[in-house]
Image (cartoon, helix red, strand yellow):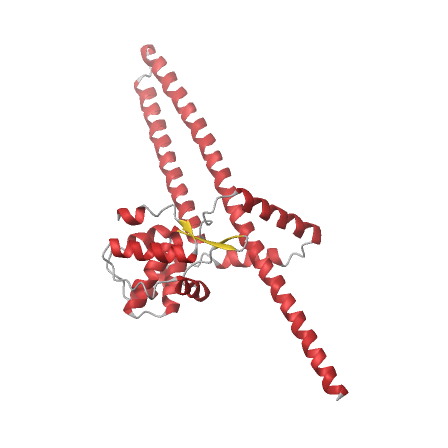
Length: 279
Protein backbone atom coordinates (compact mmCIF):
# COMPACT_ATOMS: atom_id res chain seq x y z
CA UNK A 1 0.00 0.00 0.00
CA UNK A 2 2.89 2.36 0.78
CA UNK A 3 4.16 2.12 -2.80
CA UNK A 4 0.82 3.27 -4.23
CA UNK A 5 0.52 6.04 -1.64
CA UNK A 6 3.93 7.33 -2.68
CA UNK A 7 2.47 7.99 -6.15
CA UNK A 8 -0.35 10.30 -5.00
CA UNK A 9 1.41 13.33 -6.50
CA UNK A 10 2.50 11.53 -9.68
CA UNK A 11 2.40 13.58 -12.88
CA UNK A 12 4.13 12.47 -16.07
CA UNK A 13 3.98 11.23 -19.64
CA UNK A 14 2.35 8.07 -20.97
CA UNK A 15 5.72 6.30 -20.84
CA UNK A 16 6.27 7.39 -17.22
CA UNK A 17 2.73 6.23 -16.34
CA UNK A 18 3.40 2.78 -17.77
CA UNK A 19 6.75 2.54 -15.93
CA UNK A 20 5.19 3.54 -12.60
CA UNK A 21 2.34 1.04 -13.10
CA UNK A 22 4.89 -1.74 -13.69
CA UNK A 23 6.89 -0.72 -10.61
CA UNK A 24 3.80 -0.58 -8.36
CA UNK A 25 2.61 -3.96 -9.64
CA UNK A 26 5.98 -5.59 -9.03
CA UNK A 27 6.31 -4.10 -5.52
CA UNK A 28 2.85 -5.38 -4.58
CA UNK A 29 3.39 -8.80 -6.23
CA UNK A 30 0.59 -8.18 -8.75
CA UNK A 31 0.82 -10.04 -12.10
CA UNK A 32 2.26 -7.73 -14.75
CA UNK A 33 3.72 -8.15 -18.23
CA UNK A 34 6.18 -5.27 -18.91
CA UNK A 35 6.04 -6.03 -22.64
CA UNK A 36 2.29 -5.38 -22.76
CA UNK A 37 2.09 -2.49 -20.30
CA UNK A 38 3.65 0.32 -22.31
CA UNK A 39 3.01 3.75 -23.81
CA UNK A 40 1.00 2.36 -26.74
CA UNK A 41 -1.36 0.54 -24.35
CA UNK A 42 -1.88 3.73 -22.33
CA UNK A 43 -2.80 5.70 -25.46
CA UNK A 44 -5.10 2.90 -26.63
CA UNK A 45 -6.87 2.87 -23.27
CA UNK A 46 -7.37 6.65 -23.52
CA UNK A 47 -8.92 6.25 -26.98
CA UNK A 48 -11.17 3.44 -25.74
CA UNK A 49 -12.31 5.47 -22.72
CA UNK A 50 -10.80 3.01 -20.25
CA UNK A 51 -8.77 5.79 -18.61
CA UNK A 52 -9.47 9.53 -18.57
CA UNK A 53 -7.96 11.82 -21.16
CA UNK A 54 -4.73 13.43 -19.92
CA UNK A 55 -4.29 17.10 -19.14
CA UNK A 56 -2.59 18.99 -21.99
CA UNK A 57 0.35 21.36 -21.44
CA UNK A 58 0.82 22.64 -24.98
CA UNK A 59 1.56 19.50 -26.99
CA UNK A 60 2.56 17.50 -23.92
CA UNK A 61 0.04 15.12 -22.31
CA UNK A 62 0.27 14.82 -18.52
CA UNK A 63 -1.14 11.86 -16.59
CA UNK A 64 -1.78 11.75 -12.82
CA UNK A 65 -2.64 9.43 -9.94
CA UNK A 66 -6.20 8.77 -11.16
CA UNK A 67 -4.83 7.58 -14.50
CA UNK A 68 -2.47 5.26 -12.60
CA UNK A 69 -5.19 3.51 -10.58
CA UNK A 70 -7.41 3.34 -13.67
CA UNK A 71 -4.59 1.68 -15.61
CA UNK A 72 -3.86 -0.82 -12.81
CA UNK A 73 -7.57 -1.63 -12.47
CA UNK A 74 -7.92 -2.05 -16.23
CA UNK A 75 -5.02 -4.51 -16.36
CA UNK A 76 -6.51 -6.63 -13.55
CA UNK A 77 -9.95 -6.76 -15.16
CA UNK A 78 -8.54 -7.25 -18.67
CA UNK A 79 -6.33 -10.17 -17.57
CA UNK A 80 -9.48 -11.80 -16.19
CA UNK A 81 -11.19 -11.37 -19.56
CA UNK A 82 -13.63 -8.50 -18.90
CA UNK A 83 -14.64 -6.46 -21.96
CA UNK A 84 -13.25 -2.97 -22.50
CA UNK A 85 -16.80 -1.57 -22.40
CA UNK A 86 -17.38 -2.92 -18.89
CA UNK A 87 -13.92 -1.79 -17.73
CA UNK A 88 -14.38 1.70 -19.20
CA UNK A 89 -17.77 2.16 -17.54
CA UNK A 90 -16.39 0.99 -14.19
CA UNK A 91 -13.30 3.24 -14.38
CA UNK A 92 -15.19 6.33 -15.48
CA UNK A 93 -17.95 6.09 -12.85
CA UNK A 94 -15.78 5.15 -9.84
CA UNK A 95 -13.97 7.69 -7.67
CA UNK A 96 -10.20 7.69 -7.46
CA UNK A 97 -10.27 6.65 -3.80
CA UNK A 98 -12.53 3.67 -4.50
CA UNK A 99 -10.38 2.58 -7.45
CA UNK A 100 -7.23 2.73 -5.33
CA UNK A 101 -8.85 0.81 -2.47
CA UNK A 102 -10.21 -1.90 -4.77
CA UNK A 103 -6.70 -2.77 -5.94
CA UNK A 104 -6.12 -4.44 -2.57
CA UNK A 105 -9.42 -6.35 -2.58
CA UNK A 106 -10.63 -9.41 -4.53
CA UNK A 107 -11.83 -8.62 -8.04
CA UNK A 108 -15.60 -8.14 -8.38
CA UNK A 109 -17.29 -10.28 -10.98
CA UNK A 110 -18.42 -8.74 -14.25
CA UNK A 111 -22.02 -9.16 -13.11
CA UNK A 112 -21.24 -7.26 -9.91
CA UNK A 113 -19.67 -4.45 -11.94
CA UNK A 114 -22.80 -4.19 -14.06
CA UNK A 115 -25.04 -4.17 -10.98
CA UNK A 116 -22.92 -1.44 -9.38
CA UNK A 117 -23.15 0.65 -12.53
CA UNK A 118 -26.93 0.14 -12.65
CA UNK A 119 -27.32 1.24 -9.01
CA UNK A 120 -25.30 4.43 -9.46
CA UNK A 121 -27.38 7.61 -9.86
CA UNK A 122 -27.12 9.12 -13.32
CA UNK A 123 -25.11 12.15 -12.20
CA UNK A 124 -23.59 13.07 -15.51
CA UNK A 125 -26.46 13.65 -17.94
CA UNK A 126 -27.33 17.02 -16.48
CA UNK A 127 -23.74 18.16 -16.60
CA UNK A 128 -23.35 16.97 -20.18
CA UNK A 129 -26.47 18.82 -21.24
CA UNK A 130 -25.28 21.99 -19.53
CA UNK A 131 -21.94 21.74 -21.31
CA UNK A 132 -23.68 21.24 -24.65
CA UNK A 133 -25.85 24.30 -24.00
CA UNK A 134 -22.76 26.34 -23.27
CA UNK A 135 -21.25 25.32 -26.60
CA UNK A 136 -24.43 26.31 -28.45
CA UNK A 137 -24.69 29.81 -26.96
CA UNK A 138 -23.03 31.41 -30.00
CA UNK A 139 -19.77 32.68 -28.54
CA UNK A 140 -18.38 35.76 -30.27
CA UNK A 141 -14.88 35.83 -31.73
CA UNK A 142 -13.73 38.24 -29.04
CA UNK A 143 -15.02 36.03 -26.22
CA UNK A 144 -13.37 32.99 -27.80
CA UNK A 145 -10.04 34.81 -27.98
CA UNK A 146 -10.32 35.82 -24.32
CA UNK A 147 -10.98 32.19 -23.36
CA UNK A 148 -7.91 31.07 -25.30
CA UNK A 149 -5.76 33.74 -23.64
CA UNK A 150 -7.01 32.69 -20.21
CA UNK A 151 -6.27 29.05 -21.03
CA UNK A 152 -2.71 29.91 -22.11
CA UNK A 153 -2.13 31.87 -18.91
CA UNK A 154 -3.38 28.94 -16.83
CA UNK A 155 -1.00 26.60 -18.63
CA UNK A 156 1.98 28.87 -18.00
CA UNK A 157 1.25 29.28 -14.27
CA UNK A 158 -0.42 26.03 -13.19
CA UNK A 159 1.34 22.87 -12.09
CA UNK A 160 1.49 19.73 -14.20
CA UNK A 161 -1.02 17.90 -12.02
CA UNK A 162 -4.17 16.95 -14.01
CA UNK A 163 -7.59 18.33 -12.89
CA UNK A 164 -9.95 16.37 -10.70
CA UNK A 165 -12.30 13.91 -12.35
CA UNK A 166 -16.07 14.52 -12.24
CA UNK A 167 -16.51 11.51 -9.95
CA UNK A 168 -13.95 12.96 -7.53
CA UNK A 169 -15.72 16.34 -7.62
CA UNK A 170 -18.98 14.63 -6.67
CA UNK A 171 -17.20 12.71 -3.90
CA UNK A 172 -15.73 15.97 -2.59
CA UNK A 173 -19.17 17.59 -2.58
CA UNK A 174 -20.52 14.66 -0.56
CA UNK A 175 -17.59 14.90 1.87
CA UNK A 176 -18.19 18.62 2.39
CA UNK A 177 -21.89 17.98 2.91
CA UNK A 178 -21.22 15.30 5.54
CA UNK A 179 -18.73 17.55 7.29
CA UNK A 180 -21.18 20.43 7.33
CA UNK A 181 -23.95 18.20 8.74
CA UNK A 182 -21.54 17.06 11.46
CA UNK A 183 -20.79 20.68 12.38
CA UNK A 184 -24.51 21.49 12.43
CA UNK A 185 -25.07 18.54 14.78
CA UNK A 186 -22.32 19.89 17.05
CA UNK A 187 -23.99 23.31 17.17
CA UNK A 188 -27.34 21.73 17.98
CA UNK A 189 -25.79 19.80 20.85
CA UNK A 190 -24.15 22.98 22.09
CA UNK A 191 -27.46 24.83 21.89
CA UNK A 192 -29.11 22.00 23.84
CA UNK A 193 -26.43 22.29 26.54
CA UNK A 194 -27.03 26.04 26.77
CA UNK A 195 -30.77 25.53 27.09
CA UNK A 196 -30.23 22.90 29.78
CA UNK A 197 -27.88 25.18 31.68
CA UNK A 198 -30.32 28.05 31.41
CA UNK A 199 -33.14 25.86 32.73
CA UNK A 200 -31.05 24.68 35.66
CA UNK A 201 -29.92 28.20 36.43
CA UNK A 202 -33.42 29.59 36.44
CA UNK A 203 -33.69 31.71 39.57
CA UNK A 204 -29.99 31.24 40.37
CA UNK A 205 -28.10 34.43 39.72
CA UNK A 206 -24.77 32.70 40.37
CA UNK A 207 -24.97 30.78 37.05
CA UNK A 208 -26.03 33.69 34.86
CA UNK A 209 -22.40 34.38 33.93
CA UNK A 210 -21.99 30.76 32.79
CA UNK A 211 -24.99 31.14 30.53
CA UNK A 212 -23.61 34.30 29.00
CA UNK A 213 -20.23 32.62 28.48
CA UNK A 214 -21.88 29.65 26.79
CA UNK A 215 -23.88 31.95 24.56
CA UNK A 216 -20.72 33.81 23.57
CA UNK A 217 -19.03 30.52 22.71
CA UNK A 218 -22.04 29.52 20.65
CA UNK A 219 -21.96 32.83 18.75
CA UNK A 220 -18.22 32.55 18.12
CA UNK A 221 -18.62 28.97 16.91
CA UNK A 222 -21.39 29.92 14.48
CA UNK A 223 -19.36 32.83 13.13
CA UNK A 224 -16.33 30.60 12.66
CA UNK A 225 -18.38 27.91 10.92
CA UNK A 226 -19.95 30.47 8.59
CA UNK A 227 -16.56 31.96 7.72
CA UNK A 228 -14.86 28.60 7.13
CA UNK A 229 -17.82 27.26 5.17
CA UNK A 230 -17.86 30.34 2.94
CA UNK A 231 -14.10 30.09 2.28
CA UNK A 232 -14.36 26.39 1.45
CA UNK A 233 -17.30 26.98 -0.86
CA UNK A 234 -15.50 29.80 -2.68
CA UNK A 235 -12.32 27.73 -3.17
CA UNK A 236 -14.22 24.64 -4.27
CA UNK A 237 -16.50 26.46 -6.71
CA UNK A 238 -13.48 28.24 -8.19
CA UNK A 239 -11.81 24.88 -8.78
CA UNK A 240 -14.96 23.41 -10.33
CA UNK A 241 -15.32 26.48 -12.55
CA UNK A 242 -11.75 26.18 -13.78
CA UNK A 243 -12.21 22.48 -14.49
CA UNK A 244 -15.42 23.07 -16.47
CA UNK A 245 -13.68 25.90 -18.33
CA UNK A 246 -10.85 23.57 -19.33
CA UNK A 247 -13.17 20.79 -20.50
CA UNK A 248 -15.37 23.26 -22.40
CA UNK A 249 -12.35 24.70 -24.19
CA UNK A 250 -11.12 21.24 -25.16
CA UNK A 251 -14.54 20.25 -26.56
CA UNK A 252 -14.74 23.57 -28.42
CA UNK A 253 -11.31 22.99 -29.95
CA UNK A 254 -12.29 19.50 -31.06
CA UNK A 255 -15.48 20.86 -32.68
CA UNK A 256 -13.48 23.55 -34.50
CA UNK A 257 -11.04 20.92 -35.79
CA UNK A 258 -13.95 18.72 -36.92
CA UNK A 259 -15.57 21.66 -38.74
CA UNK A 260 -12.29 22.39 -40.49
CA UNK A 261 -11.99 18.76 -41.59
CA UNK A 262 -15.57 18.83 -42.91
CA UNK A 263 -14.88 21.98 -44.94
CA UNK A 264 -11.74 20.40 -46.39
CA UNK A 265 -13.69 17.26 -47.32
CA UNK A 266 -16.47 19.29 -48.97
CA UNK A 267 -13.91 21.25 -50.99
CA UNK A 268 -12.27 18.00 -52.11
CA UNK A 269 -15.63 16.52 -53.15
CA UNK A 270 -16.51 19.67 -55.12
CA UNK A 271 -13.12 19.63 -56.83
CA UNK A 272 -13.54 15.95 -57.76
CA UNK A 273 -17.06 16.58 -59.05
CA UNK A 274 -15.81 19.45 -61.19
CA UNK A 275 -13.15 17.21 -62.73
CA UNK A 276 -15.79 14.58 -63.51
CA UNK A 277 -18.04 17.18 -65.13
CA UNK A 278 -15.18 18.60 -67.20
CA UNK A 279 -14.23 15.18 -68.47
